[in-house]
Image (cartoon, rainbow, N blue to C red; front, side, top):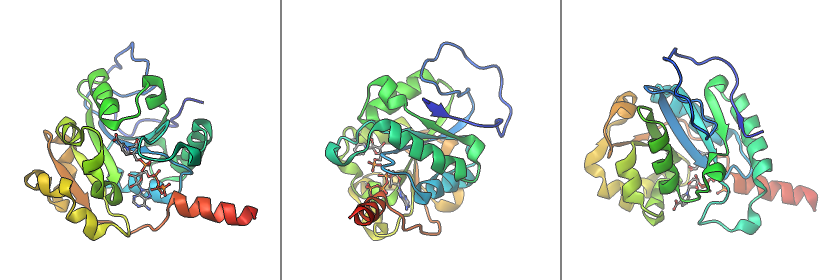
Length: 224
Ligand SMILES: Nc1ncnc2c1ncn2[C@@H]1O[C@H](COP(=O)(O)OP(=O)(O)OP(=O)(O)O)[C@@H](O)[C@H]1O
Ligand SMILES: O=C(O)c1ccc[n+]([C@@H]2O[C@H](COP(=O)([O-])O)[C@@H](O)[C@H]2O)c1
């Protein structure tokens, strides 16, 4: 199944534009979080990120972009895309706001693996949609190593969700320092989807310690 999307839209929108073949049912004016991940496997920490962003940024949708292969990770440890899609679908279905969560293999369809290329393609295909890139604070800490990271910051607003183990590191990260003047205070986060990039915010939230690495290790230990 290429994407999961159940239930009605939380808000009403005008007629849909036709002809888009990326499987995403997005309409101009929607506030949409783009949540990229390996989801190898997905877990309740992912649901926590998506729910927190949905609530704090007042989003209409969160699209879980299941990455064909994180370009900075070892492919030998990455489960097949179909398996990770199924895992993300289960986690998204269990999340609060489940009907507004879309799990998508659009990166595979577009043939992109670098985030900057994916985001450029989605912005071009969905004019008028107010996108926000979502990521955990561990990714902000290493964001300056991503291809075209300053271009990503200028393409759409970015929301960073607190993750244990990376709080201090992310706050002093090169990306945080370089774009310090574009930072929106946490209490004004709701405005973020309406803002011109570069704009970003750091969302403090209850911490969720789950990680795919720990789940893979536990599964491997169980198989021994
Ligand atoms: N518990 C969590 N709290 C906050 N953010 C999280 C959490 N788990 C994952 N994320 C964020 O979700 C996105 C996708 O993460 P990913 O699929 O790599 O999961 P992971 O648990 O970090 O996996 P791995 O341990 O294999 O690196 C990233 O932006 C990551 O920062
Ligand atoms: O484009 C890059 O340089 C880049 C480098 C590392 C990670 N990413 C993206 O970041 C998202 C989170 O990756 P991961 O593996 O930590 O779940 C996922 O969408 C990856 O494709 C992107």
